[in-house]
Length: 314
Image 1 (cartoon, rainbow, N blue to C red):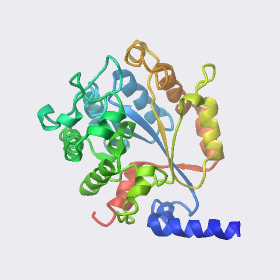
Image 2: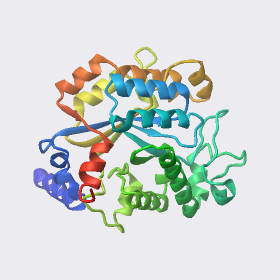
Image 3: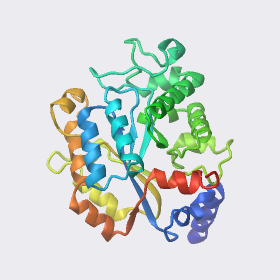
Image 4: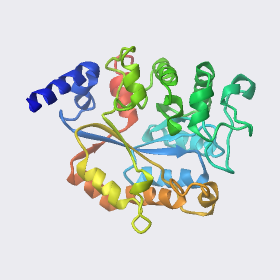
């Protein structure tokens, strides 16, 4: 009886998420493949974040990254992206928060046009709670579009959209605008069928084959970090137990240098040492060996964009 119930759930998932049946085949892999996007968040945050991410992309196993457009080191990423062309995979890390104590940024849109996104200090809010409580969906949509258009104006070939600190996905209303913007720009967006807001939206919104929804989003939590071993044990466990389907592993590579130590001084979690650990593991030979041993297919958002989202529009 239990097996029949599980089977029924699988078929229900296939009806709700049509691409679950053939996303692997559309990307050129056998059915039931373990697909993994190894995704570097926060590119553009700092010079250290940029250089570590570029290194992990070029010499490691990182397959994709996303850019914080409002941040001070955005222009370095734009120059790198133009130089590398389609050899790199860059999306926009849509942001409506500015979480560090002494290192802040403002929206790209004119402040007077997005007043609900401005904290008392004149910057984007540090926490999600004010966004969830006060953010006007029209203003959030304007800010998302402003960040995308700024990236395009600087020559970045945007491969996808995702959400910094889940800000633009933090309520069902904001999530609906995020999906709307992704569809209008004909870009895949990071959507996870397990998130409560996504489950709520599924009750009223229709999704199609081009709305690529990941089976699981993975990211280390503070309890996974070990001061002696960093995140090596956690990531080893993840790669040894990853399941078939489309998975997205979110990481934050940077160097544990004076710049990142100063930026993250109020956040030991996701701080400079944590980010160095991310860089080191995903630049290592042991990571490559684990991927091969577990027959994990590392994929990119560019593949998903060009082979699924835009395949009928070329």
